[in-house]
Structure formats: structure tokens, C-alpha cells
Length: 360
Image (cartoon, rainbow, N blue to C red; front, side, top):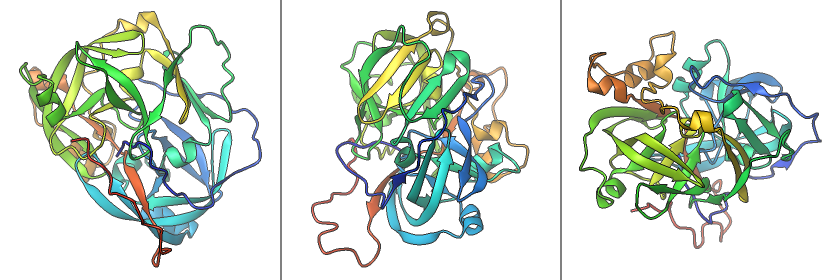
């Protein structure tokens, strides 16, 4: 899933294609959509790409890889919320999305049943930071739209402020966020997650956040499901803006190196522009800022028309009138990857490289 800081992941001979016409805005309905998705072309094949700033690599399913005939390119160590996996890498010829085209991209292969269920009849993939970092991702949640462009030239620049956009150990976009009266903490901006806020159980316990009412909840990602608890944060400060009554999913066995993860619903009242590894431009809609945050994000299973293991995983047996019903579940396809060179690697390829560092 996510998080990184000062680690440069090798992506092979990635190059950016010729400049493309400035793309049109892509519609996105925060009230019904589980993911931000964009029409894309993979080696010329039309696919649906889920935009995921919480994934350091793009990810394809084995089925989709078979359709485009990609060649093996080594393996990668993927760090997800609660586990790590070694995943095979494959070299793809060309990926086009929005106004950007890239060639020679090494992508990971993993089961994407949850993503595919959201887009029946379409080939689906996860577009990660390896592609997005070559662009500017501009999201206007206040107007239910986003686009991927080569540079940030806002139609209306008024009202934007700048936040420093760092990188976690695994290379994912990270900002400072302040929970209630605590010190500001690192938080990954993960637009691949439809949970408002997810955090490490150890961090929540050390911060004294668990001595409040809670409910049992289940979240799910590429590594499977995770049972945790959901609490309510009285306040979450992002830049100059404060979100109130924030639902937070507390996950045990946290594997990531930043203790807090913010999904796209946390930014539903904002316009964002990601200039990756440099800054996050942010502008609030004051009317939306006062609206309640979504508490029932039941993830991909909520929209799946077919009966899949993912939909069964994403739903819980709770009474519609019960407290747990209003607290919700969610999902994220995100992951963070650390490159492992193809065998045999150069003699110094692994020298000095540590495994992905846990926050705790």
C-alpha cells in the first residue's frame, strides 16, 4: 500500500512521450464512486486506470498482462498496510492516461479482483506514482472532476495555498497533519483509498486516542481484509483548515512507515494539485468544509454487481439501525514497492539497501 521517504525506487528506462493536447476534465462523483478512474491505453489496449497516489508502482492483473504480452523484468517487495509480498515485475511498452504518455514502465503483477469488480467489462489497472510523478494530478472535488496534466496551470489560481509534499520511506506523497491537540504527524495522501483516515493501532494507543467509543470495522486492500476499530477524531488539521468529527479506522500490525493514511474522502472539500516531490497546492470550499464526512464507505463490494470474494470481504453483517452500520468499512488497492533487481543483480545493486522501514 503506501509510504516512503528518501528512497529512490528504480523503474527502469521510463521516458515521457511527446507533449499531448491539454486533456479535458474527467468527471468524478464523490457521492457514488469508489475510485478516481481515468480512461487509459496500455500498449494500445483501452483500459480503465484507477488513480492511486498511495501506490508507488502501477499494478496489472495476470489476465491483463497476458493480453498485452509484457516481458518479465524482475521482482519487487511490496509493503501493504499489514503485510509484505514479493511481486513479479513486467516491462510494458507504453501507458497513456490523461495528457501524459510513458514508455518502458516496469509494473507489478497482482490480483486486482476488487478493482475489476468496480468496472465490469473493462480491463482495469492501478496507476501508481511511477507514472503520476511525471505529471501534475489536479483534483477539484468541489466540482467533481480531475485531470492528469504535464504542468499546473490553474484555470483560477485564486485561493490556493502551498503545503510541502514530501515522500515517505517507500516513496509516497506525504504531508503534515495534526490530530486534535497532538504534535503534527506524517500522513500519506492516498487517493487510492476510500477511507477518510486510517492509522496505526500503536500510534493511536501511544497518542491516547483509544480511550473513546469505538466500533469494530473491516477494511480491505490488495493484501486482503483487516479487522480493526473505528473511532472519531474531534479535529484533523490539514494546512490552515480543520476537519471535525473525522472517522478513523485503526489497524493492528501496521507495516507502513508513516502512522496516518488519508484517503480521498478526507479531501472532498478541497481542490488539490499534486506537484510530486515538491508541493501540494490546496484550496478549500468553505461550504463543503462544514459538511459531515462520509462514515459508510463500504468499498468496492458496495458497487460490485457480481458475487466475488471481494464483495463478500467488504460487507459486514450489521443491523442497519446499529451503531456499526453508520461507522462503515472501506478499501484501498494501494501498496508501496521497493525494487529488487532481476536475477542476477549487479554486484552493488543491493548494497546499503534496507528493507522497508516500519514506522514503529
